[in-house]
Length: 510
Ligand SMILES: Nc1ncnc2c1ncn2[C@@H]1O[C@H](COP(=O)(O)OP(=O)(O)OP(=O)(O)O)[C@@H](O)[C@H]1O
Ligand SMILES: [Mg+2]
Image (cartoon, rainbow, N blue to C red; front, side):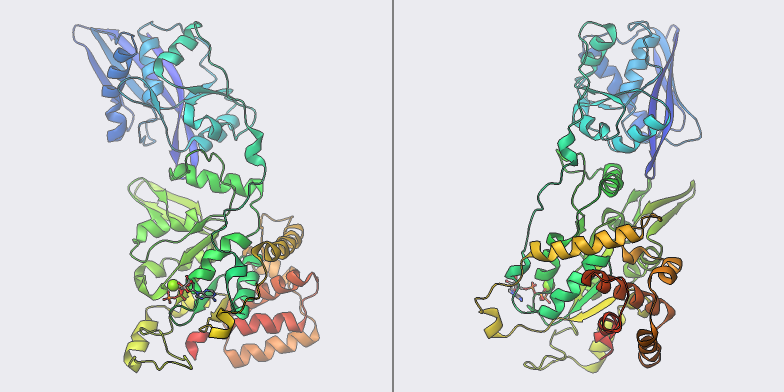
């Protein structure tokens, strides 16, 4: 008898429907064959299914030739998520299960040898695909049910083990559908690592961080050791604007596919803050692998990618950032075709001005040779630096400031201003799919960054004196848009522009 069960494959960030067809034929010799471009994990599925069925108190059909086909055959199948549909297919094909209404259902789950179900990755895109294909019911491992239920309008059954699902399908012990828990959609308090109030001095740097977070602009901090660069970067999550629901779903999808959703967190609700170590590989940063998975730049989508000690990263690794920083997506090519992952992140970088760290320090002499300073800085290419909107100097904090009892402004107060500025941006950009000023392309810049006479002559002379590239020109306009938004004014004025230009004066050029 032939059985057909619905399942799904994840390709990039998308899921595609896969039919698991199981045919059982009487034959002298028992065998099980898997066809339809399975990878190693899928091929091993046969062994897991066999044990799981036996250990669930059911019988694996003896004396039958079983053929499992994963259709469409030209789509590569990976991972162990097909265990559950294959097991149910085998039981149906060998008539141990009635052919019930599984035609509008999707099954997924890895089986352990005792028949319990294990977590699978990519449940959110699979559930989304199910809704778009008019599938009504989903059978997923218990721990993945909250993630599947993020997509409304689906009946999601959390399945603990193969025997539980069999009992449900036979009608002995019906499963209870998962009730979507709306509290996931409520804003949760931010985990605060460092509060801005604890950072002494550095007013200039703090203001730059505020501008950068308000518009999603890239930022670079340069300063001597112990000035507080890493400390300030760690304080950024506390001032980032809240993640809107559509953005949250977008981010969650990436984490689901990368299998990086934290336990008990079906929906990611705070903006990601990724701080990869400088030994990270090219594939780890931009994504890749045999089955391409999102890299750090995609895991930082809608959040922050913090690269501490920037010149320590290999130059080749840094250069691959150039294209995604411009396009906000990354394309990974493979022989089978290319895949695209979103990568709209705010880059925050930190570095010392020279190897010893004291170049330009008024209090401590730099011990580096001109040659070593040059080599150190050459690790960063001009085009990469050109993509950084705000370059700021973080000087050492003087004793008086450091021990000053006066508490600075709290992260919550700064965040409130940033939220208001983001709200203006969202309203202005509502017609497009953009969410912040940094996302604006030339079209939006022309429309929303209009300069009046005085500001226009200011930028004209700055272009000439600072040798700004066309890219830098556009980036300066976007930053001034954000500064005006923070002030709550629609018209970009010359003092907004002047502040934006001052962040552009590259510290490294000095
Ligand atoms: N402005 C500041 N206010 C309060 N504490 C500070 C400040 N700057 C530095 N510190 C203290 O110094 C420690 C070291 O600072 P941090 O690690 O941020 O320095 P850094 O600039 O990243 O140095 P490096 O270049 O060596 O990485 C902080 O953990 C904090 O305790
Ligand atoms: Mg540091």
